Image (cartoon, rainbow, N blue to C red; front, top):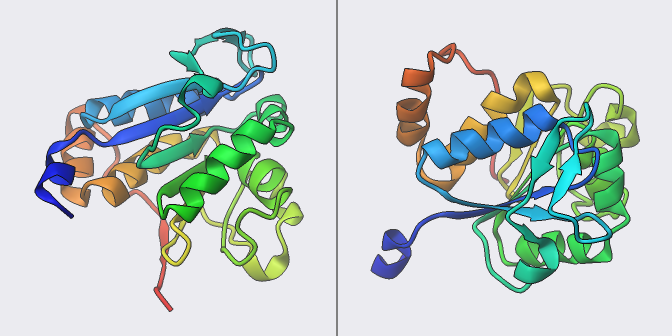
Length: 206
């Protein structure tokens, strides 16, 4: 890593869509901002709307439409779940290409709840990666690559996946750990009074 790369802020794109799961989106955004990351919330709504209802009807507000930042490089792309939100991601060629480009650039891709199965698996974006998802969607992932863990990181593919709203904090802290350090994740967690024994699985490098 160059000195310039060390000095620039860590940039994360959190994609949202109508029907995105509010806890997964907002918890992740909040914790990453607490870590000092530069977080951009990007709307994948088909009409380009920046204000949309989440899975429980709570209004979510994006910074920009995804098309406005589609050519920008980020250190991580985050896909919250929520069935309708994940289906919107699935049906957006721009979102799929955005994720694919960051995957090929070796950047971290992080997906939670329905998104690993409905988006990543549907489009065969990580055909060899081990992953988890919400229990209701796990069977959509081939058994050989399926893991029933709260959070799973596949180091060989730079893919982080998690199970749902109840694992959103762990998911966000793991993003911090992989983009910066576990020390920073612990520093952010301490004043939040987070239970210290966060469970996750790191898959060994081949």
